[in-house]
Structures are given as structure tokens and as C-alpha cells.
Image (cartoon, rainbow, N blue to C red; front, side):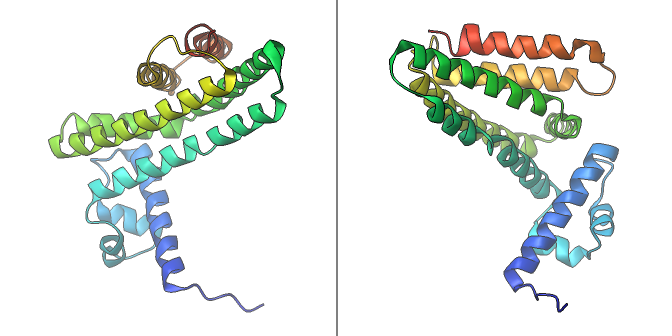
Length: 215
């Protein structure tokens, strides 16, 4: 069967994704500082020219990699909102059921995320590098502020659909939830006890029920 020839745009997008995939694997395994552009291009099967056609520097690639992971994480949130709308109805009972369903869906969703050791190893590596590189720190801080705004928007959306008044500003709840998930993710990096899995999920559920989405 004759292979379909990629357009120039498709080929460049494929090259970019392969470079990001190679960099992610190396940053997790070796660390950002111990990984060179040559390491990345060799693992991806490209030349230095291909790298610099897509990224100005290894630092720019790192930010792009973090953004890609963030987009992957939040991609499932609209589906939770849509699912809650699908079971919604009229009256207090319907609102209570919708809120409980969203809490369960969000707990299950974030329970999968905080157990993603590669994701949290990568973010931990980013924060360690930010502590040593002021320019990267500024870029990472700006990106994290964008994340906070995005999560706060979802907090408002969830509250509206559940018919509740938020106990704190959406930005504060978003920050608290992000910090809780980050803490869980770092705690569950290699070295933790798997006996705590159920406890961790209960903590997330209690945060949502008692602090985040309470009436």
C-alpha cells in the first residue's frame, strides 16, 4: 500500500512531537541539566538543525513540554461538565445528584493524574531548574499563573452547574486544589507506600465535598 505523503506542516508537527517525546523521556530519566540537545536529537532521530527549526533553546522546549502536559490534563474536564449536564434535572434532588456526580468524577479524574509519576517527576524537575535559573523561573511562573486562571474558570463552571455558592474566591480554591494535587503527586513519586492510595483519594474527595463544592 502506498504511504500517504505528509505535508510540510504535518511533517514539522510530527518532528516537533517526536522531539518533545524524546525530551520528556530523557528529562524524567536523566534530569534537565544532564540532558543535552544532542541527547534529545539522537533519541528522536533528528539533526540539530531539526531541533533549532522547532525550538530556540532547550529551555523553550521544556516550557512547550509542560504546556503539552497541561493541555493533556485539562482535556478531560469539559467531559465531566458535559456528563454532569446529562444527568441534571430540576429541583434540589437533581442538583444534589449532579453535585455528587461531579465530585465523584473529579476525584476519579485527579486520582489518575496524581499517580502519573512521569508527569510529576517532570514538573518537579522544572521547579528545581527554576530555582537555579531566574529567566526560566519567570517563564514558569507566568505559565503557572495561566494554569491558575484556567482552573479557576472551571471551578466557577462547576459551581454554576451544581447550583452552589463558592465558600472562597475561585482563584483561592483553584490554588488550594492545585497545591493539594501537586503535593499528592510528589508524595506518590517512587519511595511512597502504596498502602496510602485509598487515603489519598479520600483526602481529594473530602476537599471537594467539604471545601470546594459544599453548599
